[in-house]
Image 1 (tube, helix red, strand yellow):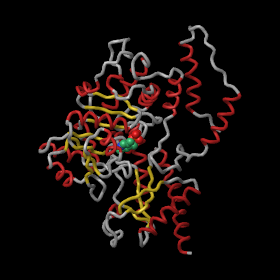
Image 2 (cartoon, rainbow, N blue to C red):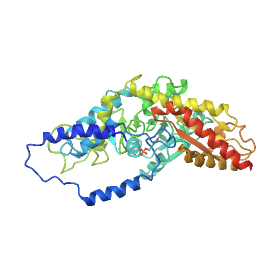
Image 3 (spheres, rainbow, N blue to C red):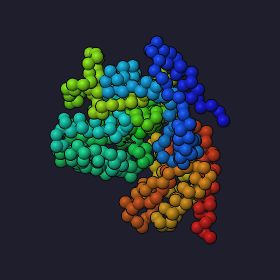
Image 4 (tube, rainbow, N blue to C red):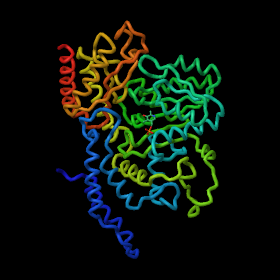
Length: 453
Ligand SMILES: *Cc1c(COP(=O)(O)O)cnc(C)c1O
């Protein structure tokens, strides 16, 4: 089997890092023992009980393998295990975090901002809504019914009233419904999702910004999944317009551990107005003694944070800069092209039922059948039969309105049907479209065949 590239890179770099500390008096390094070896042997067996997330035939949920440079950099930093809470605990990696976050902010057009990494999108969104609540105490947070469920739950944690706004037929926040809600005067913050978690739909940020001329409210953009598509130039018109106005938001969340090729434990929150930093103020007697430079713990709700995560992100962005039209951007386009190709095949095939064209790289489709029960049953069968051929898809519950008013004319539009879902987020997916289609088509034939017997 081929040597893992991250291990190879690590084996080259780690001795050099160790060399930098070689002047210290020897402190016994731990040698591997038989007990450790046998635990790892057992662990290897246990870990094999996973879907092959790293392989292009895994095309189910949102799982993208970290880049080898990210894995190598993470492991290299782990030898030191720095803590980006304060410079005392993570001097070099805090600086790497500041640089990496600056590059993410620049991607959104911000040179002045306040921002830092978090353990993930949930914490990043929590910080955004926490600041929003401080600025507009008691006012409502609203988000589309297709927004991530975390906003409802975070609002409850923060004791902020929350309201869900209806989505239109394509799954985007419905503007007339939002305007009705705004007329109540109770809304402090609108959460705009650029790339919903279920279907990758893009809320009309540009149109929502226009509503600010009439109503005063804060805009938080949740781009945990879709943020990096800011770099992609061939999105459809509506989505392009939404991304083009992202710099006008008050806060933005993006998850490097979703589309940014990072190991889990890497989200990012950015605020347009750096003065919101004053809300984070605290007087810790124990942490901040060594310098006048900013300690990231002073602008973060989380205290200890992995310096290794910042290190991995920094290294990845050195290799694949966040430039429009660059290699990283074109690799994002590959996944989207793959999704559009499979969408086209699905749309032409009478066994399947599709909704609107995917806006990013997430596909949802149903199995054509007379009843919702039959369709749902077929979807589950295809899911299992495809997995038997090593093609891993996902299942999703979707309102039938997603497929237009005529798909199942005799049931209410909010009835749910179990559908197949595929997140084609690896650049290699583009080269695997034919293989994926062949396996899917075969699984569908088998599923349909077995119901006819
Ligand atoms: C994934 C996701 C979240 C939650 O982020 P985690 O990193 O899983 O904590 C929030 N919002 C959106 C749109 C997401 O896709």
